Image (tube, rainbow, N blue to C red):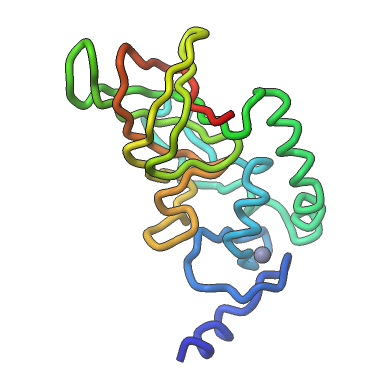
Length: 189
Ligand SMILES: [Zn+2]
């Protein structure tokens, strides 16, 4: 049965891997589905979109769905240098930029925050030890939870589920002292 399902889904046109159902994959302009691993690789150069006020997410179009196979192949070849440029630009190996910060509970000393923003580079998972960069100060934190918001293809059970890869939009739950605001970053060195 499993083999049959695989055959029906076909293979990733970029890497040739068998497609394993909804795994956070994206569709290219011609409707061809690429695998989750290739989507993770291409995503930093084709980040998921969101509205300017960040209150309302734009579900489509996915910038990956605007390119064809030839362009996707080129982008896959350039993926390492795109990541390297971002690493040099920000000076960290993983970068998440906070667009919206909401205090869920707690007081002045310690509070639980839900922060939503853009993962630019790298990967974030629950329990990861990270740094909060706020106004030049760095504080060590642990991610209590990670939830991918966009692309919409990032559903339960997918590669993107409970992960935030560069180019995705995600919400983190963190416990922190002091205040968190838009423009602050969560990073890994
Ligand atoms: Zn692939």
